Length: 400
Image (cartoon, rainbow, N blue to C red; front, side):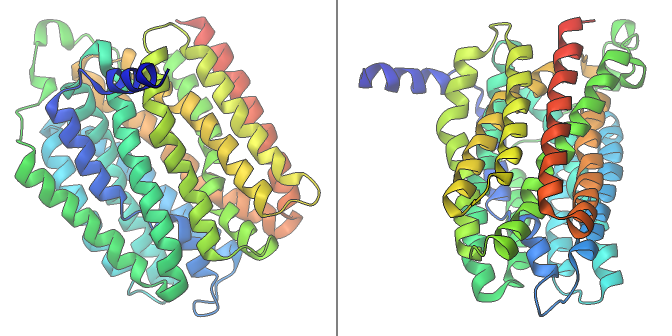
């Protein structure tokens, strides 16, 4: 029994290219500093900063707006310049901007530099998604994306747990750590991952120039809209949920950091094996639909009477399994509709869906929480997630 489990884990990680592993290592270094975003609302609403939940929601709205714009430009630049230079510049630039943001105290400057940080950081994502596709084979592409997500989530688990301790000590240090890990990831890419000549628009002109534009792929556009709705709900996890945990459940920042890190730990243990078992089995529609449904259930759980620290932990576990079932196979879906010459465009649209959600979700969530209370917010988020689950079911079953 034990040997079979060990063999399954080993098989889940075999067959991936060296460059895929290096790309994931770089992502791990970057994400080990993931501290600013999950604690930004707590930072802005702390007595020292003194901003309201609504003002913090506006800041996150600007974060999403910057991410949306950056994703669009990142996709354009990836198709024109290649994924390597775009990743390198955005990693280094984002690191510098994180450090600068931490020095800003006036609300207007915080808003401006939050937009700038997210613009640069999100321009990284289409390039990174295109790089994963380039370094992987079609037969193991979902696992290659899952390995990258594994790196993200291990880094998240480490970063958010350390961030909880650091924020209890001196919350301003989070910006320095996040910035330095970004810069370290850029240096690791520079030294260990060799640049490649990848300019797909100039390749295979006889066939690739006929590739459909992502903006004319109606089925994909519906998928992007469903993704945006789902992501707007999911982003409550990192923005309004920590405020709810601290101010309404009276949980400490350290405990919040620890239970949020459970998200990354579970993903590290479970996701690659699940993807290995389900990859190429033709069950992507079922997995995405059920995963988004689990996310809906997790938010609805927050309205259980007498909720406390234990139920908060259970909620994180449920939302994590929803993430595991849905997100790797969402990547598989969009990449399956692309050709090399339009991959950056498709990646950009997918990233823009998450970025727009990062703009709208926290902002609307903060407004609802401020005016109607968190209980109403969780009912709305749960219902919207169920609608997203149904939408994915209809879109993915059409297969057009």
